[in-house]
Structure formats: structure tokens, C-alpha cells
Amino acid sequence: MNTYNRQPVTFTHGEGVWLWDEQGNKYLDALAGVAVNGLGHAHPKMVKAISAQAAKLIHTSNIYHIAEQEKLADKLAEISGMDKVFFCNSGCEANEAAIKLARLYGHNKSIETPEIIVMERAFHGRTMATLSATGNRKAQAGFEPLVSGFIRVPYDDLEAVKLIASRKNNVVAILVEPVQGEGGIHIPADMRAYLQGLRKVCDDNAWLLMLDEVQSGIGRTGTWFAFQHTGMMPDVMTLAKGLGSGVPIGACLAKGAAAEVFTPGKHGSTFGGNPLATIAGLTTLNAIQDEKLRENAQKMGDLIVTLLKIELANTRGVIAMRNAGLMIGIELDRPCADLVKMGLEAKILINVTAENVVRLLPPLIINETEVKELVSRLAPLIKRFLSQ
Ligand SMILES: *Cc1c(COP(=O)(O)O)cnc(C)c1O
Image 1: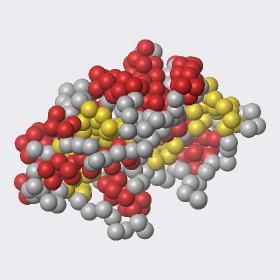
Image 2: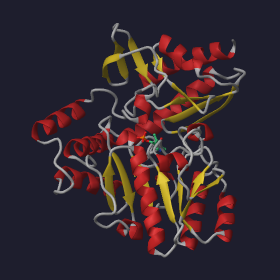
Image 3: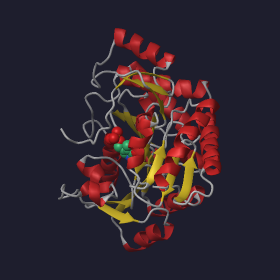
Image 4: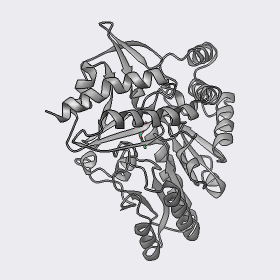
């Protein structure tokens, strides 16, 4: 169906940060399938692991124990400090699980109409509940009636949340991205203070703090998860995008009381956590650890922004550059969707979100030579675009 305005290109294969099209042209991939291909393309460890798994077992069912799923759950618990994991196949499904968990948590406390606080400019997915939680009127238009039970506040505004705490007694949770991705790479002015402040409001009111780390998780911001920059723990965290290096997988993690909310029959998934997807997740996490890719994401992300700031100094029309590791946004003073096409012509894959923010989400394996190549391809494009 006509759900995407596709760019006029078809890729045949890739290696590392590079992709080749049907005509043999080579592109620098600074988008990584929208924060999915953290290990780049055709990473040898991934190729080997999923080939071997496919030869053994791709799928059984959650009716049975799945050894690979249990190993990935243990690994996720180890690196996050969370207690339990539910596996699904995508980011919106992970958030659906979190939303259901929060509602059940409320009903268990005899709250009949539980509500969840969500943020302006948030993105949580395209299913009915996650679309309703998303803070983008354009994405919602035409799909009313939306799912009820969400209260919206401005992002990075702790006082707005406190005000709701003082007025309402049916709130059960806050759902928030530590760094907003689709919304335009927005990073709280003081992420530590903001998340610690939200943590305290949740503690004081027995609400669940639920972090959507679908885009910010899996090493992208320089730590396994963005919340690890802040010295506090969430009750619930959702993951997807980078977790399986392109094999579809999502996860909803929970800690403490939140980890005990679901009981058999309350939630499920046919494909969720199958042997192939969870081997892909396990291999991804091990490679990120063994190849020190979190450290690399921090270093390379900062280097890209440093170099772009030099190249674009005195360029009128660049409003701001923001990054948390390799989540990078370059905000311009005008809508800039045309830059994607210009990028394609210059053999660099980029993205534009929130109309006027150039978004870069390169593979975590990108090296210094490739960073310099990225900047030397991108900076002239932005200059040319802004001088039109
Ligand atoms: C991409 C994204 C989602 C949705 O993930 P899908 O796999 O497309 O359903 C949810 N939350 C955030 C923060 C995302 O970036």
C-alpha cells in the first residue's frame, strides 16, 4: 500500500557503513535503517550466528521454553539492572505491552480508569494505543477515535507533571523518551535532573516510570541505555530498533513490582522471542560489548558534531546541533525534506524529521575515516540547500 514516499533507489548489498544499489553505486549509510543496523551491514558475527541458528531452529512457540530467549533475557537484565523481559517484534508492540502493564497495575490497585502521562512531540509507534500516546497531531489525523487514557504535558517540564500529581488520583504511569528521536532529537536540558525529578514524582505517587528507549537504547547514546546517564532506574523500559540488527525484535523490560504485574494469559505474542530473533539480539549485544561500540558511539557522535560545527560555522540557517552519542540532529530554519534527495545524489543516506531537523543515526561501528567522509559529503549539501 502507499504508506511510504520511497526514495528512487534499491539496495542490493552492504558492508559496514556502506550500501550498494542496483547500478553499483556506493553510499555512506548515515541512517542505519533508522537506528537499526548498529553493527552496520553484513557484520560477520551476525551472518554466522543467524545462519547457524536458521539451520537448527527458527521458531517453536512460547508454549515451550526457548533457550536463546532465556539467554537474551539474562543478558538484558545484566546490562540494564531490570528484572524481567517480555519479547515481541517491534517498538510499538513493546510500548503496547508497557501500556497494558500500566493499566493492569492500576486496575490491581482498584483504579478503574487509569491514565498515563505522555509528552508533546513524543513518538511511540503507529498502532492505535501507541499512536494515541504519540504527540503528533498529523500522525493521528484521520484515525479518531483515539484510545483514551493519556494525558499530555510538555517535554522536559517537571512542573507540569507535578501539577497533574497534585490534581489527579487516577494516574498510573509516565511514558517518556529519554531523548526524543522522531520528534527532532530533543535532549532534556539536564537529562539527569529531569529523569531524577520524574523518578521522584513517580515514587511519591506510586506511579510507574516507563522509558521508551526504542531509539535511544542499545548503545546509541554512549551507554547501553540513555537512562544510564542519569543515575536512576525506570520501572519499565521498551526496546526494539537496534536490538536485533535488523531481525525484527522488541522487548518490554520491568523491575520490581512492575515485573510481577503480568500473569499467564494477560499478554502474549506468536513470534515474540523466537530462537532466530533472540540469537540476533544476543549476538548484537555481545558484539557491542566486545567491540567497545558504546564508547565508539560517544566518541564518533561528538566528533561528527564538532566537525560539522566547524564546517557550518557562519552558515546562516543552522539553528542548532544536538547529539546524544550517535543520535544527532541538525535543526535548520526551514523545512528541509529536499535534503534527503540531495543526499542520495551525493551518495549519503540521511533523514529529515520534524520537518526541519536533519537526523543522523549512523551505525555504531562507524570509524574516524568514515566520520570525516560523512562530514565532507553532508556539510556542502546543507550549505548549498541553505543558500538556495
Ligand atoms: C521507532 C520508534 C517506535 C516504534 O517502533 P516500531 O518498531 O516502528 O513499531 C517507538 N518508539 C520510539 C522512540 C521509536 O523511535
